[in-house]
Length: 349
Image (cartoon, rainbow, N blue to C red):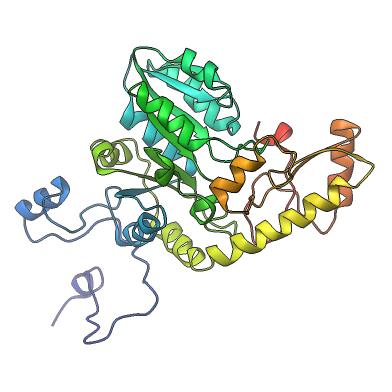
């Protein structure tokens, strides 16, 4: 007779026979059973397919990464714990102490903080530059400039980066172009096809689309990938299985949500532009937007799901608007299934 203290903790699995589940299962296990020390060593070294420890790899991350690899036309994709984790993985894998980064002047606030103040703590220097000004970009390069970092559509000012032009400048100066594609998603733009070397997404936003995930991804080419898995593991930047599973489910409707959100944003921009209390509306879909023609070429007559507007009366007017817009939630993010309001000056920038 088997004892209870032997039966209860024994690891078990279920054989599914000749069928397999239509929906991917969640694999919450933190560790996997290996046949031998040799097998574990081969798997951890990447010489044999399989899983050993969740921080290094797990099926839910691979399922999500594989779809994102196709969406971005990438050779490699890694899933990270957040968009900031993906950015950190890019910086740490592509640079070292003594190197230099060119940081686009219009970046998400925390991204700029990481690439300037936090990078400096690692001995990595940086220069913030207006990436709309090609002469300024050219003049900012140094002998050890390794990365140029921009956003496809700037958060929150909605300037559009000339990815082809910036990639050409970066490569001419032996640097790589890293693009944050969060505001566009791969539905509107594939930065790697525009010459970028690396692209990141904050999956927490529109790629997941339901405000219930904290996740990021980094995509690129095999030639730039040698240090990425090590950095993700050693710095503890890996994504959880449940978040990956949720994001995979959200991805199923990404194309539908992006198309509808872009259409809704256009209507909102047109409505806001005609209001007396609105001082300015920033939206790349307007013909007088400084990068309208560029946006047409890069995004195919779709201009993103975000509209930025400035009210007469500044901060006080903005706070009053937020309080009165009872049916539109105020939350410092974007990309939800519902329309939302954000105020970057008081939250993210």
